[in-house]
Amino acid sequence: MAKIIEKRILTPVTKLFRIEAPMIATSARPGQFVIVRVREGGERIPLTIADFDAKSGTVTIVVQEVGVTSRLLGALEVGENLLDILGPLGEPAHIPPGGHVIGVGGGFGAAALWCLMKELKARGDKTTIILGARQQDLLILTDELREACDALELCTDDGSVGFKGLVTQRLQQIMDGDGLGKPNHVIAIGPMPMMRAIANTTSGTDIATQVSMDPLMIDGTGMCGCCRVSVGGKTKFACVDGPLFDANLVDFDEAVKRNKIYVKKEKIAAERQQKHLCERTSS
Image (cartoon, rainbow, N blue to C red; front, side):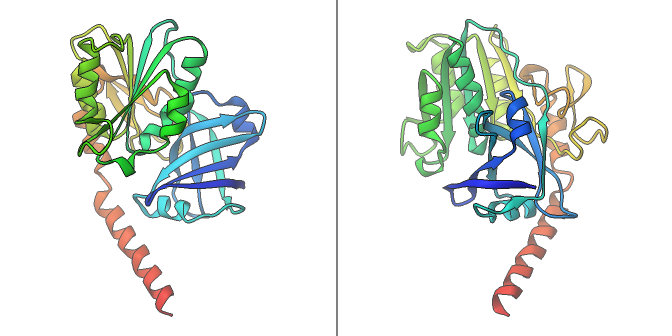
């Protein structure tokens, strides 16, 4: 059991939870993740560690409600418990010190940049975060991310705040020399199309670029093989070899196809859950 001690609603479908997990908090490093279960017999879902505090023994995760289990998790309240939480899992981020690091975040993936960029800034690296969303009210954790880096660049598709356009366009401007300084490293965390676009943007340059892959995952220990991705023509497991990989070596075509394997079954499960909720409400 892992007790929820804080819950924040970031958007109508995005929730932040701070959870009591002292053993995980003591060992966690930026870039790693946890796997949680909400109920007995339920699926195990991987979630990036957004923040951790060894002194208080807490771990922070951010959840976007897209399927049955994430909706069940999102419905939990302060004082309730997760059935279990496993971690920290995966390899922590490895970035040579002394350079300019740009973190690019999209959707709830932006939360994964929080503890990472905070650590890089603390060790003396120059840090910039480019945070993108369709519109202003979908941007999350802007105050926390602003404190975690030297410069926070907001991008919205509709221009409601910050740069009007895509994160790739703003990244290209910085790469071309707009005053912030050319990056030595780029880390992209977010939807697959966004990470793929970032990889294309930095391709052919000397900018080391990493993406955080989130394929289908079951055990999180490298035994099931479900989370395999092709990187540089070799099979890697995101749970033990990643989740961060060289962006220009990832086979995104394969990754996209694999992530769509259970789309129909996920839709059926969501419809079943909605029907059950309606029946409970009407009874």
